[in-house]
Length: 485
Image 1 (cartoon, rainbow, N blue to C red):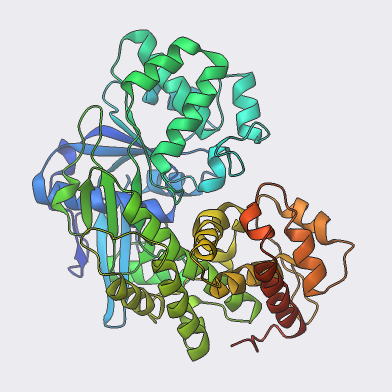
Image 2: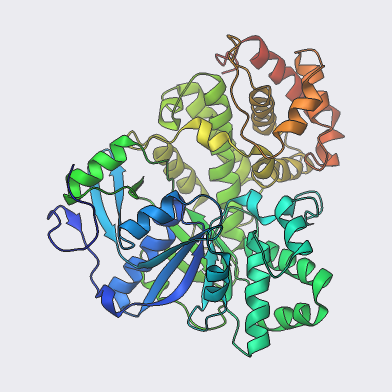
């Protein structure tokens, strides 16, 4: 094993290095949630912006939960390798803007101190949908979410993302410091607007004056982010070492495609992201976001559920099944019919591009990984557009297939009887609903349609569509090797 990646000197010539002086960077961004997607998307965009346009926008990161990534970044002075894989080969880029990593549970006071530091002008986040304490049934704050409960009870010692943002802004207001810009990069529809609503609902319960100050002074830009990023494996770390000459335990891998659409509303400056290929600064992100959620994410979920229950480990393997690949393409076109025009985008070309990305043999994106947290993802990816499709007179058949596949996955058992973990924040509720019902499509679907706050009445009240779901689920229960296609 080679020495650890800690400096930019002496690296293999096969690695692309930052084209700026890291020593001139200052902490201007604090990012919550330094997982694989942040390292494949936000940080590389910032790295490329610094290389293209200069500036001193350094990033500090903070993990609100597990320490592994933060510890690895600390051991490597913030450096890590991003591998870009496609069928032509693998390239390596060493990413340089990260200056420091924090682990919030170890030092919550230290993280709060960074949030109130006037040098921090953007607080970005990729914490996954379930971390926000968002109630999909109301669109607002989930008052039963453990972090929300804890942070409302003890606002000055937060543990969740909303609590940390609110306490950081409260401290800045008290000291007369300009606010930071909260920047959500998670796959929530209208993520900035959702985040604003959650913060304002939280502050309305604890501090009306702070509530009014945030409403008047703090922008919450929405973003649309897109880059397929599978979990790192031993092969990731081996290739990172081969291409850099250094051991890198923070390495990640991703695809060549990357896109970031950002509403250009910031309180106190930002990096020159618009100088980077794939970034687009806009007034309103909603059309791009809806396109991505419905066409890419919706088809991804469809393939993940069908693929996992059908025994396919990776999305690229699912795409080798001509019937499933054709189904994904058909679903994308069904989703496109629910969209308004998207400026600068040809939706037919976008669909073809997505099919090629899913089929990329160099990307090992596990169906089980994509299938997790379904109750958090289904509403915006599948259920809302299904309602619109039915209202337009469409049969919404591909949506019925996708929902039936999720329900078959939710049973938590392969056709051979082997059990698997249903990785979902509502797994216990799901298990309780179907524990004592017959293993038939009609019984399982009827039970899961009653899961509180998940399925809108426009779907559960549509008898032809719910029957279609039930029929397709029955087929999948009888034979999970996908005879449907």
